[in-house]
Image (tube, rainbow, N blue to C red; front, side, top):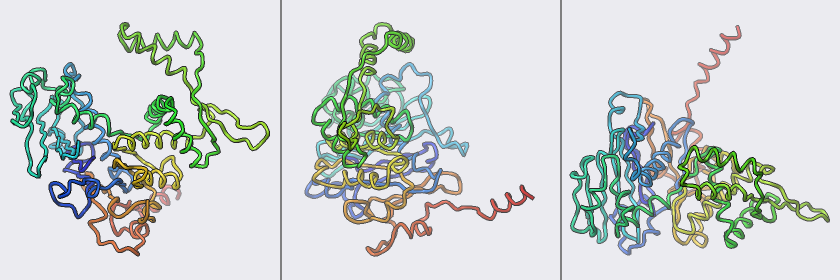
Length: 435
């Protein structure tokens, strides 16, 4: 369960931005009864003007997960991916920092690292098994000798640290070495925080995952139920196998061989097999002919967007993970965006406490701060400062009464995070241009 995320010096985030998933009235190290679900929020929605940095918050978290997942293979890179704030010279040369506060097996952990293009500048992990902070390991420089271990971290720590280079996170290397304590930590962070970016290639990747998931009959039934719920006229799905044209197979093999080693023939065959599976959508025709089959290329972008978001949501709900969705309203009807939020906020559907973090321009979602939709605890705002940097803050920073229209108050500028439109300047410029 994610409790908090912090990022410093990442793209438009210059100073530390912190997104908290704990209740605003929770200020302890851990709940007295150990019930983390009672003190955490299932949803966090970030609202703000265009270019205010909403997406940057999700991008920073996705980058942290990307590094955790893949840094063990970064040894041969000439430079590490480093995305500092570029609008002042000082920030360009400084490290970027990322920190995640989360629970694994009901124990709170805090993991973070600092990085620049040359290597890992620092790294740390601590936990709170009994209410007090306990450091497990701490790294103060890129070299293995800069790592120190607590007696509480059992395992072959020193031996594993010798496998680590200046460009590798110790957590990533330890997971590859099957460290008994660190591997589950790495697994949670790398496998159960999923980013659904708003772009075509990302949606295509999610649809490839959908193909795999609906091979399971239980998941297929859930997918069909989601489509019927969305009132898209689709009665069922099927996963069909087609025979790829030999010429197409040759072209795919040729292209993949360039990208991969020839010894990876099994991987290439797997890609071809996946290409030979297609999702078919069966629509009720309302005639004697019965349901008609349409291919994925015939479906609307809205249908594909719903399927590509709702099924990953169910996957994270199944395992108690975190789904990050950029621009939730961009391709979903407001009713479906609201339904996606409700999946996470309904305890009967989400018994493991999975979480949804999204960005949106759709202020109508703020008009329903009751029931299964957004509550004041779920709402965050992003705003661009005068120096061009992004700041985020929660709605709970403001006095909010139950009978107030949050949407109207937000649009009127009561909470900030709205664009300041220079109408008079634009009007004057256009009049000059046409005169």
